Structure formats: structure tokens, C-alpha cells
Length: 124
Image (tube, rainbow, N blue to C red; front, side):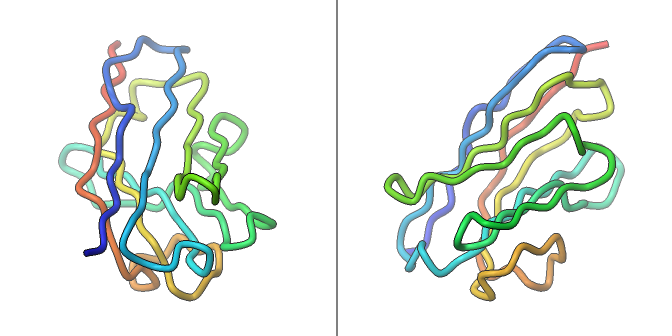
């Protein structure tokens, strides 16, 4: 059974930090790229960051570039999203997703599996 389980969300003050985790099981992890998406209240889901299967390529949305860092630990089948200098506009449900293309992508249609999300709330 394929599972992607996000954790690490919570309430954070502006300028604060959080680290999200995405733990995967049920598929051949090493061949999959992983991406983080988010959906803010009343808005469409958007791609945030991605990492390819070899951890050699990462990508970021302009809105988080320089503040967020994605990484993966293949020994633990886990991807992390380190979020620094958080802003109120980062408030959203954050989802991780896996792509069998193995390529870093922020396109939803490239994703094969999705987690259920974790809520990040930036207080203002």
C-alpha cells in the first residue's frame, strides 16, 4: 500500500522556522522524485519545491526561493522541507507528492501519489 505521510506542521510566528517531513512507503522510493505543494485558504494548490530521484536537482517557487530548502534521506525514505523566515502568506496545507518520472517537477499532473497534508499556520 502506497503511503506518503506528512508531519511537522504547526503554528509559527513571522520569521520563524519549521521543518516538514514526508515519509514514504509502498513504492520504489529510489526512482521517484518528490515535490511539495501547498494550498492556502481560498486559493488553488501551487508547487513549492521539488527534488529529483538522485537528489542532484532541486527546484523552488519564486515565492519561497532563498527561504525554503528541500532535501531527501533515501535511507529513511523521507523528504524534508526546511522552512525559514516564514511569512503569514506561507499559511497553507502542505502536501508532498511522488513522481515516477524521477524528475524535479512542480506540475501536479506529473505526480502519481499524494499525501493527505499537514497544516502550517503563520500567525500575524
